[in-house]
Image (cartoon, rainbow, N blue to C red; front, side, top):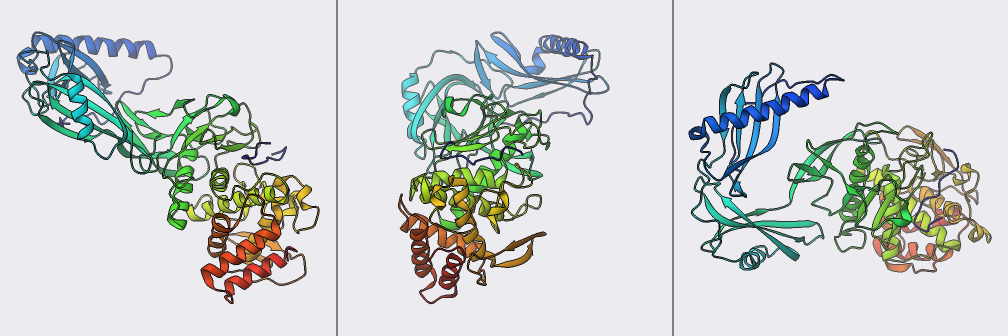
Length: 530
């Protein structure tokens, strides 16, 4: 099992006003060819209408029309949208819509600012290299910038002129995708306009595990992509390639023309459904660390990861890869366990990256158990942080994607393998099972011993020394554990060392004789770590 995976149980522009139809055509099964024929006929008739009414559209010699979209209303009315070119160059502000009846007769038109698209020359006096250099200078906030100039006819203000439209691409201060589009006059070198190349958009996601949610996407030509412009991560389809064969450049980015993603079903045939959860839960994990601890990304460098869904075939697992700086999630077992993209699982795996960047706990012996426990703890805390009404905070790890749960905190041994209490043999257990000691400590310190119902679920946590432990809440304990991990623990820290590290952290945060310090100590004693 990879040291970064969760062990799974065997079971389990100038704007134009377009006359828009309120009802569009619904094409029944079996009529696709007829619909295609209607669409092509509408396009052909629209081209003819533009040619016959050249004065209306400003359509003249050297121009051509490029189909962008076709809307067919239920009553047969047709709306054909074109972009324009002039002598092969895109005309910015030259787009138009032809509105025609069901028989293809012109009813109306909508045009952007440009009427006439002709320019006196399509040969630039300012070379492309100069345009590119000027564009980079006009985008100081873009790091590691590259520029791509494109010669266009710029007519967004209604007066066509030859221009360089240069796209500057790079990264922002948080490692997120960043870019500028800089437009300069190709005759004089004058800057015409500049605007952001990356457009943050709020998409609607129909998720598997957290209901209908808003996700941060990026607008691009023709639609949207699952690239978070704030946190920097991008979510891709691994196309069922094995995890070992993936690298950050692998896979296929998810795109949508509508910015609506997924169908909300488990075991979904819509491949973007798992991507919704993965994309959103990566964002929640990023936000948890940043807003709770001031940690700006997994490596605290503000950079977002590459997130893959649909990794492998019936791979009932998920893992973090430091070398790839990638999150990889499988599709579950195909019958009992759905896609491994739920909140605590995603938080768990990305926490392995946090641990690697800090204490770097060795993935063997007691240190390995602490490594896994740390991921369970913070994966669970991401779930509490998200406060999602569908997937409420609990102390059951991976209860959504591995029902009824994979591991639990109040009494870890209920899985039949994990340790509730420390003993000299704990380090010989699989790290996913020796993690039970740390998980049990976290529960006792957070909630205390005995029976209680939290968010509708009943827990009953015993102690290993028959003591009674009073909890101080998981937010305080998580804060203590984070400081212990990032300040005091080392690669070989064992459970006794974790007690010392967490008490040092509690002393730093709350004081030596504080209730918090005493609760940490009592909980460790409650799992036989003294």
